[in-house]
Length: 448
Image (cartoon, rainbow, N blue to C red):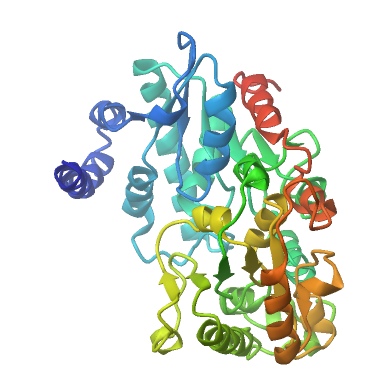
């Protein structure tokens, strides 16, 4: 049955890819608005507990919707949430700009008059479409999950023109000092602005970062915390298995390499400490050394299972994961949260998963034996853990891994400092779900 539904879904997408550009070209707004209505679908896991009074359309994204689900499965009383397919908006965008447009999510700003003209045409098209769509199918607001998606930038402005609240539930708040500095520099230099109504962020850190970047003003941004952290909190009372979980280190996580690729080195010539950076910087060696230690530990401890979770979509060298001992398993797809529940020691580097491990009260070990200089230190996430949580050499890491695995897990004892949960995710007390619910319900109506 699932295969049949998936097949039908792909047929629908392919039909829309052919049909929508034709509807856009000839400005057949009536048919296009009906097509949007047909493609709406209920988010069944967060149906309202009582009779639905309002409709909210969600431009859903797998990695972003977790917070909404975690909050609304508990607090949603009267809102019917419907998925508004993002891919349809992408097709409309490409009908104006082409598939290989020079503007991207991160590099949206341009001085080219022909591109500026296309942006205005696209926005005016969306204003007409949304106005008719809302007349045919009444709803209160839109929800998205980032302000940078190129197909949605003019959509924000179109909604603003029509006094329809476009709310963003922004989750990109776990940044190294280097990332914060480079992103803020680019946003200011390109005069980036959020064109929608309001943004919900995880933390005061994220709020200040967006305000200093002049993406938003103080009336547009609210701190609500990270709702999806509640599932990690629930693991506190769960006794983990005799298992190790390694969140495979991402090559450039926390480094500014992607910004150099997008904007070029000259763009950042005035940034502080730029002379210390090399485009050759990456965490590949740290990843390989960590894998080597885990292989050795697995062979010496065949009764202990080791799970390696790579980030979905992240490219890795296949040879990294060849010839592994039988008690090491690699998972390349899906989310890694269930593994967190069952694992005793969590290993990672520059990842939000370490914060989730802190909330779950698991033992944590970070590989801290990499090349050090001022730039690389600023490219590390600071978790403020105990000395026992840092392997400062390969030998030290191996010994501490054995030590942590030998410890008894005590459900009622805090194993880690909690302050970074508040700093990065604004949720050290597990009340973010309620705050997110209040943000949504308080902003259903557009207010100047």
